[in-house]
Length: 291
Image (tube, rainbow, N blue to C red; front, top):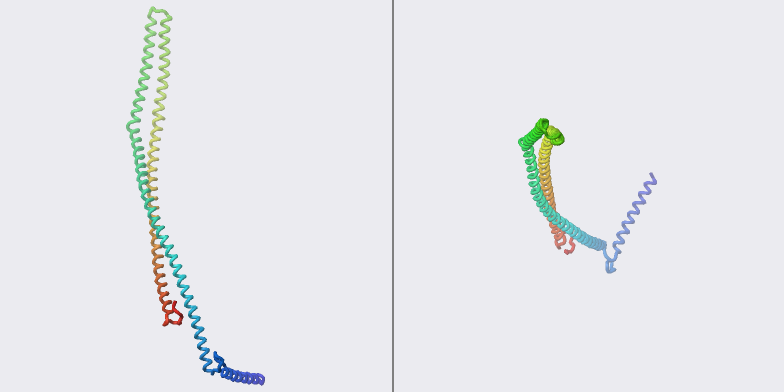
């Protein structure tokens, strides 16, 4: 305890000595020209020096704000230029899209007309085959088979007459044999032709015509499906065009929002610049020189 009290008294003594020394120094201080100045004059000099230093700092701050405003203005001009370029590009894209859509619409109308025409022809072919062509071909085939049968029967009758006639004739056996044998060969050929003709008739009725009917029906179904697919494709392309137009409208709205944001930013920049100019006037806040 005694040690702490002794230390406190020593510190108090040192403090008093420091105050006395400071007053003495202030009394003995010299002014800028070397003459002695009082303590009050010395404090005034210190205040003036601090004010000068603050003024120099305000001028530096004023210049820093000017550079910041110039940088903001430069970046704003760059963004305006980018926006103008994007606007022109969007206008070009919109015009190109309009041309593409016009070409697509004209092509689609041709494709739809072609599919409708092909479907109509397929329907007409099937209707003609079932109502006219098949019946006509069957009737023609029946007549041809009948004609072939008639020729065969006539050849048989002719052979029978020859055999009867030459059997009762007084002609030589050689002559009779030649005539009869020739007719027999004709009869054999007629029988072969008639047999083939009957096979062809059967094939026409049981294979050729039914197959043609199935082919025409399949072709009609194919054209029906093709027309439906054409309609679906045209609907899909129409949806694609609508989507493309919506994308363009969305991009246009985005550019308009950016333009509004740039206008607001320019307004704030002008406001900050006016405040900066006012701060640099003789009546401004920091007394910095106006540039």
